[in-house]
Length: 455
Image (tube, rainbow, N blue to C red; front, side):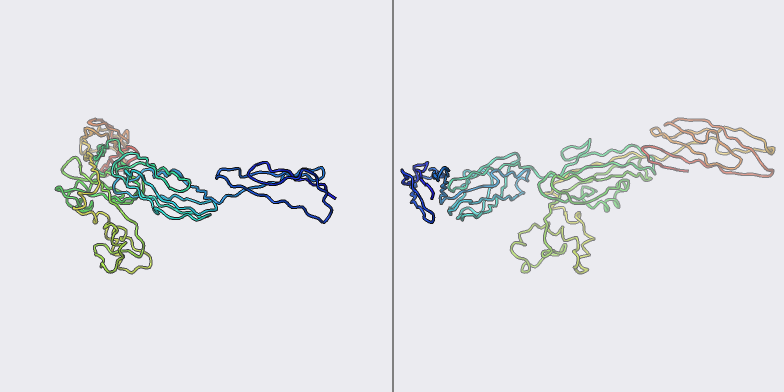
């Protein structure tokens, strides 16, 4: 037999008549009580306890109330778009709203004073219990600089979402010691013809989207492909650029290698201007591949495909696996062919000037010939050779190519600009008879591990 007594609840929200006296409960019998709850307001007490005394033990019997209400959770509460393009850039983000309660609730979007082009979809609806809704956010601005905007999701209770980011002007820039806003100058050191020098031009994409770039030459105020400019202007033949086109990701930097290899010409310098052009690009699926320079039939394209940029044909120059051989003709096309003179007026670009001085390696030798008459075998004859560097700017090194019976001391001669030196030539015969030999010297230049040799 158990001795049982039930006490009063700890909160007045619950109504239970307590037992003032103990009750002896024989085995096999049960004791029941009715509990009443009075719901007064939303934020009433949700938890309470009922003390139950059994023999010498006390049990706290818990009571919990689960209200039929909506519990809204927004993730994230702040959406950071980062750096996005002004005017032309449209970036989409998502916000997830969950109802973790047990009651359905309606919602609607309040944008307030929309100074930005902020679009939120869906704008209204019903959020079911234990379900979620994904909102798509798109923002577009017209002025460069940071922005901060907020909108409200009107539900019970209302939720606020903050939108932050920065609008930037999409462009490509050159990072070089002598680079300005839209003009850069790459100056090479003076070189002998046959030498080479390397310079690197860094091109950075200041944009939130991928772009393409191409390099064009200029001749008589007309833009043309670099290879075409080489045929019309010999100055372009002195410079070799790699690559001439490519693709840049958002905030990505690429390296353009410029090699200066002077060639023989009347002028003692080489100068040319190139234009680095920014080209917008759009990724397309295999189902909308279009051949270059071939307009598609309107009936063959869906309305969404017709709204794509005309520069979509840029991506069609790459043949896809499994396509017919007609697409292979696109390999002969490049980005530069797609940038016409009309599009050049609207395209973002910057100009680069390539300049380098050059000259022919030349050394004067006196005398030009040596004649010896009636010389004895095993007899040594000494003569003098006079060398002069004809360059006023560059040094040069002279190497003697060994010939039988003839020695030069020293065999290696270093001449500064406009410097002259005399060296000794030793002639020692080993056998009798007529002997004639031609002495050869190699002209070499060592500078920054570049080596050039001339005879």
